[in-house]
Image (tube, rainbow, N blue to C red; front, side):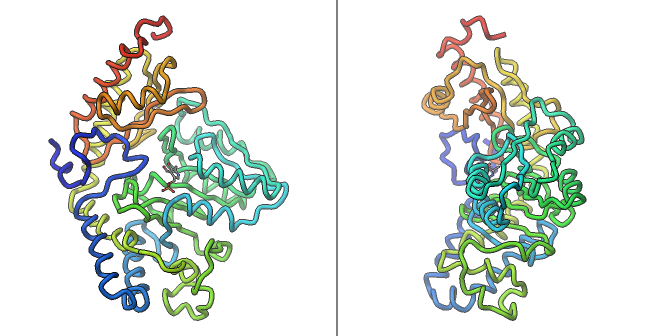
Length: 394
Ligand SMILES: Cc1ncc(COP(=O)(O)O)c(C=O)c1O
């Protein structure tokens, strides 16, 4: 048993290979979270009325240092969906505007842009990025051919949800800036999986979850906005920050607007420093490397089964999350429930661009037994669903 597993609250009998959907939080980080809630309840008026900004500012500064930016370029928000909504709603799309994106985007965020484009007469243009993915420069070049004189915004994931591909967002943001196009990066899976240096990455707007790969309790994410474009962003909930003229609470108009959005439990935001500290204490750079090796092994083992195939041309295309193509004959819902009911394996089975896939997440608490359980589950599924007997499987 991997000793990191004991540091998490996960049920021991589940083979948890879906950190990508909802990540697990370490026990000591969760304890900190509950500690903040208890502190709040012992003196709510002192905590929320008098000390709130100091606590939030400290947490934001620690997060900003981790992300290599200034604390006044960041605000805490509940989740990445919120982050995309804040930006998309602020940008006041007009008839004829084009939003350029890919066909690998996360459904809820895709819907956000689709909804606003439909409402405002703008066009949402999904540029196809076919599999297997080419080298990053080629991907960027190919994507950027989708720009027209009407392109107002580029919206792109840093690490995609269905296909788990790391997109070359730095190259894309650079070209977009030169052309006067705004960039909105959905980094929901990035923080915690890859190192982020937000000021040099070059996005105008960048949102990521702390509650996925960065191990914080649920309900903690951030929105980064480059200082020059901060005046473009409105909060979805207008609150007391509007009335603060002298930035006395936080030192920034942008932060004042977002930091207080009505009464809410801020414990998840305040536990982010504990999650960052946990990663450092447990040598997370090494943990990530190990996870990547396990994931490489998972792909090799799974694709040795008949009918399974890698969607990557290169193992640099992914980090701790990867999708693997499965035989077409599987019914995705049936396979998912079979793996869970019969093998206790929790992982998503999905369809993307007519390809059926499983998506595997490897986090610090996973070990080789988890990979073995997945491979065994898939092997027996081939028999259970009579797929080995059909001719289509090569
Ligand atoms: C790429 C991507 N963006 C956004 C989200 C939304 O995250 P949340 O539900 O925390 O808002 C997800 C969730 O899995 C995601 O994969």
